[in-house]
Image 1: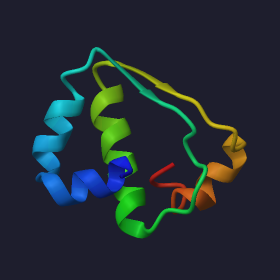
Image 2 (image 1 turned 120 degrees about the horizontal axis):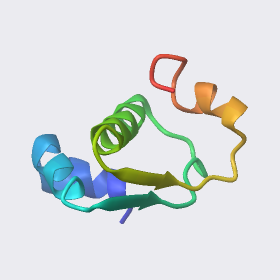
Image 3 (image 1 turned 90 degrees about the vertical axis):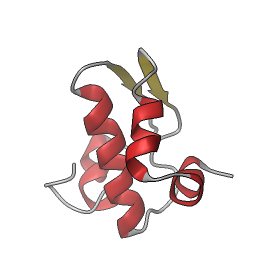
Image 4 (image 1 turned 135 degrees about the horizontal axis):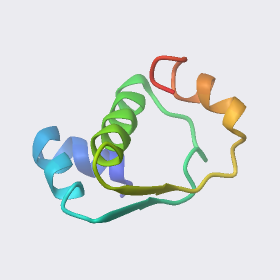
Amino acid sequence: MNLWKRLSKAEKKSEALKKINEADLLTIDDFGLGALIAQEQSLAYEIIKSHADNLSTIIVSQRPCADWYGWLGGKYIT
């Protein structure tokens, strides 16, 4: 089961973010392979924002950065 489904099913978002932020380094591999619905776009933003503010984050993607705007739902989130 993918991360998005596990986070939305198993726990409240704040509890999930707390667990993610316990890691000193967050690595997101194959970022951007599939389409995201609005709820998943928002969750991706929250995960990256909350971790990247204070901790190390590596995002690996084969999707060109120029494509991220449309994939993540616009300039605000991207």
